[in-house]
Image 1 (cartoon, rainbow over the protein chains, first blue to last red):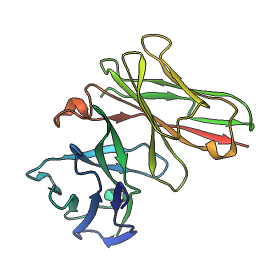
Image 2: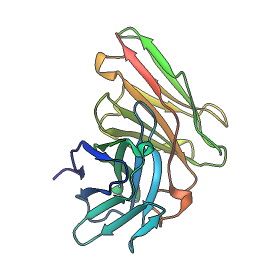
Image 3: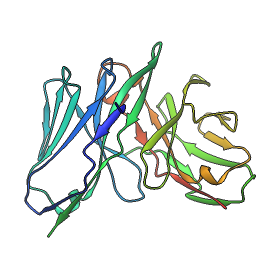
Length: 113
Length: 120
């Protein structure tokens, strides 16, 4: 099982659509979880952290299921500006007290007019 | 908003040459990182650095690579004897706290805009 695995995509949706991305992770000792977005040839930027109880930030909702080692991101009312690659990022213990961010390969979203 | 700055934005070098990529982390951050992303592939961890020493490194970060914090503001990645497969975008990042700690804004990584390295 890959350390962090995401829907391969790409996703092409019309403006206003709702789209969901899924992600699974292999290390049950992982402590924290994030969704980043990355525009073409740009740096990853934090979209939202994922809390155990699930959290919402405007049109974005993140869910975490520790038992299933599964994370999701839901985007409602998609905008053209949401077009980007969405990266599932997991903070994994790499030995002792060290942690490192491990990235999924990303899922490309294109929102069409 | 504070940001991580990286130079150069793009460097072209010949195979076998040495390159130094520079980063200025956010001023109150204590933890520094280098990641790389080969075109079309995922972002990969290279190394983390805290308290003037490497705290973690990946299998990619072999003897060809080194990091240094030469002064109070810069954090550099040196790649010796570059190979074609070193061509990638190299991202520097910094965080205020330890990512493994309980979730808080202090533990979030902020990335620089990246340095694109092209090895010919």
